[in-house]
Image 1: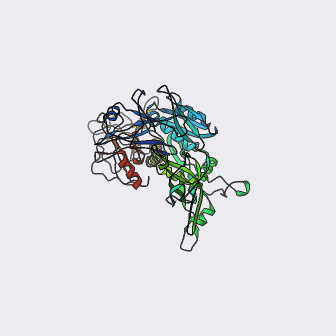
Image 2: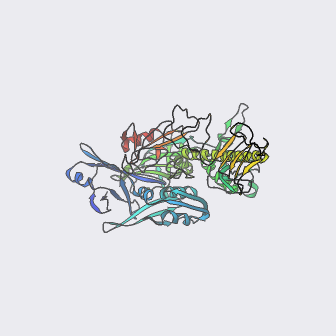
Image 3: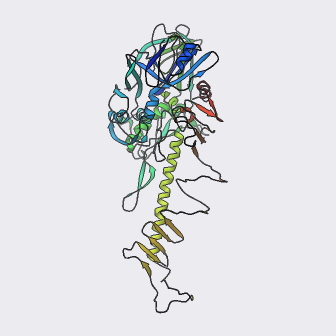
Length: 579
């Protein structure tokens, strides 16, 4: 084991070959995490001061992993260091992507958008397939996460070091990490412990697919800025006779795997089995045929229990890497498990490879990734106008806002149209000019209306109008902007309310509240966030990490009640929560 210590200038200044413990936690499409425990002595105490990054040789021997040190802790006898892959930080802070749209575009075009202008380059080892997505005010890291989801690829980050300096940073893109090893691990021989489990946490046999929202238009066909319903695939038909995997008649808004329903479906009072229904959303998908295909592919991964196994393996000199396919076997009295599975996570022991822990599973392990949606399935929002967001919770909130915005836009347009019609009808009769004595002014005839030469300003007995900016009539008023000290109302409908205080309010429904600390109160990268969500049922504040707002499970550090938890405490909380 060799731990290479680098300072903030990425200069190598020390090499450690002795440690009490050192492990790397690896998961597919999650950034690796390093945990090191060093003995406290004068040399280590001196070297910990300038420490910013730690490099560790890759298990394949083709380069190095580089970890950004989060928070070293010096105890009475030990020094504990937790760190996360530096790529996570690089792609979070090296500028951002303002607005890029990809319509049936090759994978390389999206990768170019992510890495061009950064300190990283990429190498593509997967097929350069076509797909549709967009990046709008997102970090490079969030955009790469989106690519992994849309193009269904897996990433690996490798540094190359020459003459004690980092000379290149390469993100390798694969269809699947790892290889088929043909290794067999048998309980009682070269596998010290094997535990199997069937996870039915998310099990579905049919699914409704919801695609992109349809832009609302006015009577002239111009877009209004709002959105109506999302597209679905009701109009698309599939048949097994034509080579499709299942039958899906036209007019049906869901796709079903009948064999899975017969095995896992829910049973009604008559004993009839019905499909376990899911709703999958693909925010960028505009084509119903493609939406059906994506919905079916995702449904397949949820249509059977998730098989997982964990093992502590005496490797006998053989390397097991993330993504590798292996066979794991357990014989017993009355049972015999033999499965071809894939390594989904590795906790690599750098001091003794025989203590390396692996977790393996079938293709359904996508569900494990869904539990960490803050990291894997969503985009990191930079502005309040972003269409995608960091977590499923915020995505649902954004969807609700978009849906409400469409309804509100329609209501506003309807109000303007109603006022226009009332003004045009002018059904309240002519206007009489009254003098100071309260009587009609002699010699001045009644008038129909007062109107500017260009027609933009108008007043009659039914209301008033100043272009499209200020209108009133039919007991309604429309204005581009209203300013004042007090607004009293029974109901306020709005997609955005900016203000300093809400007093005596009850907030109910599917609510997502995200509050940030005052600017300048904490150092950059260590701001506090408070989140209230019905999905997780508690509030939290984050400290440091990569500043992820949204689901707390994506954070590398966590504070509760103003007290920052260390990395190990956070890990235990995640384990308890099953994430």
